Amino acid sequence: GGNITVQAGNDGVLLVDAGLADMTDKVLAELRRISDRPIHYVIDTHIHPDHVGGNEAISKQGRTIAGGDVSNLTADSTEGAAVIAHQKVLSRMTAPGGPQPSIRQLPTDTYFGGKKDLFFNDEAVRILHPPAAHTDGDSIVFFRRSDVISTGDIFTTTNYPFLDLARGGSIQGEIDALNQILDLTVTAGKEEGGTYIVPGHGRLCDAADVAYYRDMVTIIRDRILDMKNRGMTVEQVKAAKPTRDYDPRWGSTTGFWTIDMFVEAVYKSLGERKKP
Image (tube, rainbow, N blue to C red; front, side, top):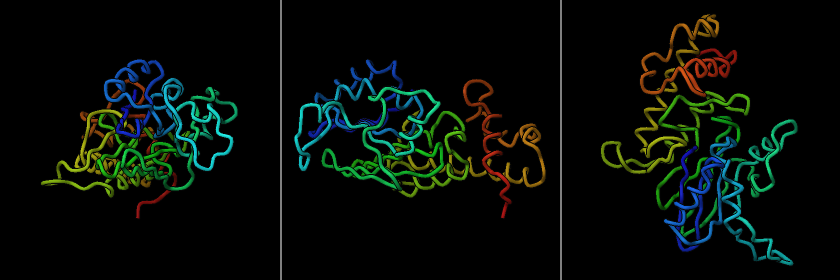
């Protein structure tokens, strides 16, 4: 499944993503090694099941922070951890005709617009929404004191970007989101170190890894755009292999996201736009 980020402290535990449903027992066992405090928040970075599949089982083990102006507070008001996501995640999960998840798998706290802020474990946590990147419901989670950013599948170390066009993803939005991540980072010596980046899949990274990935995606976008503007069909573009020099690092001819699938998604995402 996808990577899970854990923030643990005196207030409790916050997770970014919940992983696959069938990995929940292992996730909970690992959490208990980290902290015996309750799970209060799960933040979904997007809709895909390798990131939200564990919502139901993990949220059951937690407690929602309630009180203040809440009237007639009852025991069930605190039952289960709060699951936070952008509103578009909830809208797509409950759309007619699609698979209908259980109530406990759905986000319980959604946000509109570009951001949502939390303060938890003596740390400001900023949740940012880049429109139309990997999907149209992505969230980037920035732990400001820890200087850690969880990117969801906007950035991975394992494959070309998965542009989920059916759920609002786009190549330009992907590049914009990668630049947004880089705007949040501060590097250490010689552009290495500094802000830690937790990708949706793969190893822990820093800003240099994201910058290299951003450059790769931008170069491939420009190549495909040039070919499309010269009247080439999507099959001709695939045959021209615009990703050839990057394929040994990022490409795959098998699995859920192949080189051809990526090239076709970029081609379709570019529409009729002309290169300036």
